Image (cartoon, rainbow, N blue to C red; front, side):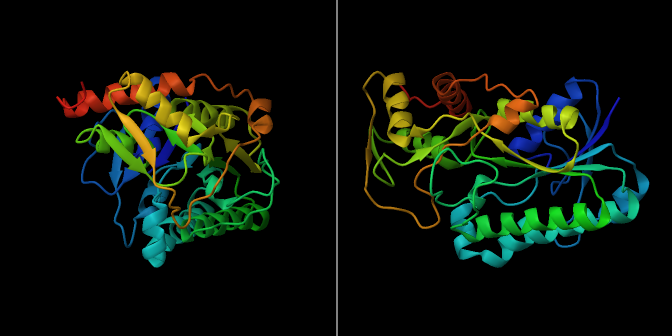
Amino acid sequence: MRKILVLGSEGFIGNHLVHYFAAKNNEVYGCDLYETSLKGGYKYFKVSRLSPEWDELFSAHKFDFCINASGSGNVPYSMTHPYTDFEANALDVVRILDTIRRFDPQCRYLHISSAAVYGNPVSLPVSENSALHPLSPYGWHKMIAENICSEYNGIYGIRVSQVRPFSVYGDGLRKQLLWDICSKLQTADEIKLFGTGMESRDFIHVKDVVNLMECIVDQSAFNNEIYNAASGTETAIREVADLFEQYFKGKKKILFSGETRQGDPVNWKADVTKAKSIGFVNRIQLGEGVHSYINWFISLHKSPDFI
């Protein structure tokens, strides 16, 4: 039985991780900022925002794996609050790794970074060896955190692997594109989104992200390997809008403003060869995942406007 610690265990990806690994008979622990776990089902520790009690936790327990799903994931917020974003996405990482160095150096550390480190790539698909050109404080801080991971692996021998998720979605996500569309369609039959609709993303369902994490835990050497977490398929935002319009049988319409938003990349498609080499398979297709998300949102709000 593996002893796994998930940081940010009450967040979107983190909560999927704790329940997935717990269901596989691992001994799962989690940390977050809430007083208690909202869903339960694992051993939970509350930590403070300004001075997290990492020493106390890692001196009392020895973990086989620590998966860091914590931090801020809000690009627009990082544009207006860069210092706060730095604390959440870079400073906390060095705090955690240094605690592992001092108290539990055998613990393997799996870091969740972001495809935001790539910015606007010169060519597609984007491989893990592509140049990094962040467009936002969020992307810069994620890149800094990756360098910190490389430092602790190269100098101190801490066993590290890193994941760069692209556009993760799925039931339970209460922000970003799908949440935005659903929220707007609650009160209007015709809505408008940023951009032209021709911007593209590489969408991956959170369940597939979790499956990749398990492949890394099982197969990676933890010698600072980096893996893209994506489907390997480029999808225009207009295609996502079409899935919504199809779901509502033409009763809802989605338009585009043509305005761009600072910090957002234009086109993304990932090379997932490296992920596939350790057994990753993308199982949930976008149409299935989007329709499931709409059903989840409707059940959450029980909205009579979705008819």
